[in-house]
Amino acid sequence: MNVRHEIGIALLGMGVVGGGVAETLLKKPAVIAQRAGSSLIIRGALVRDLKKARAVQSPPFPVTTDAQHLLTLPEVQVVVEVMGGEQPAFSYIERALRAGKHVVTANKEVLAKHGPQLWDLAHQKGVQLRFEASVGGGIPIIAPLQRDLLANDISSVRAIINGTTNFILTRMARDGLDFGVALKQAQDLGYAEADPTNDVEGIDAAYKLAVLASLAFHTRVTAADVKHEGITKLRAKDFQYARELGYAIKLLAIASHTDGGVTVRVHPALVPQETLLAKVDGAFNAVEVKGDLTGTVTFHGLGAGPYPTASAVIADIINVARAINGADRLPPPPPPARAEGAPRLRSMEELNTSYYIRLNVHDRPGVLARIATVLGSNQISIASVIQKDADEAQNSAELVITTHPAQEARMQRALLEVAALDVVREINTSIRVEPV
Ligand code: NAP
Ligand code: HSE
Image 1 (cartoon, rainbow, N blue to C red):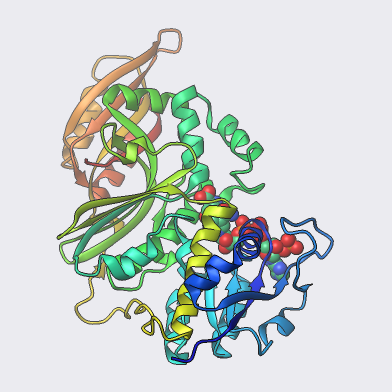
Image 2 (image 1 turned 90 degrees about the horizontal axis):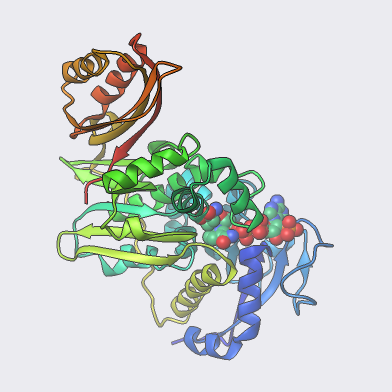
């Protein structure tokens, strides 16, 4: 076995995650070297702004804005991409793989948009592309799907994989805060970005779900395949009504395999209060996987932050080092192309799901019957109706209706028809209900 004394790392990015990685590698070099079989040496770090204060002050390696130089250093065997964003991260990863360097990345956006191309390139070049930190931060979920759960046929992955939105939803549910106030708190505490669009619109979760679904179902799912809805339309009263009905509201990322097809979607959902997912609060993440052999297994922990994420990035680097040293020669297999036998991707319209609908109606006889007729004509059966907040002056009332499972396409059509009824002022919210 040809063991390298040192393995060189190029760190692309020294922000939250890159800072945590550098700090940890410098703080515990001996124990990491023992586990990797080689000393892991940072040969240089790429940043945008050389004047910015960093977690590691006076680093013992060059900090540069010259990507080309760093990517071509012969003493670098592993490129660690923790810059974020699609470009130039994608080009740098591609360049590194083409040059025969192993790559570790935390970048779900690049993987969700270009994963298949990069996996193929890594395979072709005989190098590793590892990405444990791309989903769930410090929660080990990529390696279990690539390795430990391989004997299973997985029927579903249901996940809370965006800490920012889970923090906001928790505050709305617990403290009755409105969306804008809870978002401001998330920004003040450093959870949400200055531009929180990707988080609150479900885009970040959709990227992560594309990665999870590719691995769970041994096929290739990209960001464009994932339907996503965000949390911006939810109001504090939805949480109150959901609680009365026995549910929490969570932004769920769901990939399910039924009738030979896979559906991938991100949207707010009513989740029964007694389930583990309903109890995942604050900035925590959880991923629930249902396998035919394991039954349900749930991974829970911190999905972000410098140290939880550094844990995943450094584990990937250690695994690459072990492979370089021959201790663990086989890289994990990439998800195969959409070959014969792989499940087809099903459209969201084929889904069967129950709904919670909150709507504002004119308060007069026959209104409920009109709504029920529209639902009935679309083969949607009502499970419960609660009338809330009648406003005599406005002659209006608020209705909360829950339905039995119905086909998504029919439900969407019925919602349009209900909204068009002259007795309906507005459909305020419609949220899918997840079974236990
Ligand atoms: P961040 O704090 O914004 O850090 C990004 C770093 O990359 C900064 O050092 C920045 O340089 C550098 N950078 C960005 N664009 C660059 C460019 N064009 N050229 C040179 N340097 C550039 O981001 P982060 O939170 O660490 O996230 C990094 C990645 O990890 C993302 O893909 C993210 O989704 C993923 N991730 C993050 C977390 C988390 O907890 N934050 C958790 C899981 C996964 P400057 O410092 O000079 O601006
Ligand atoms: N914006 C992400 C979140 C960070 O809130 O979960 C981790 O990917």
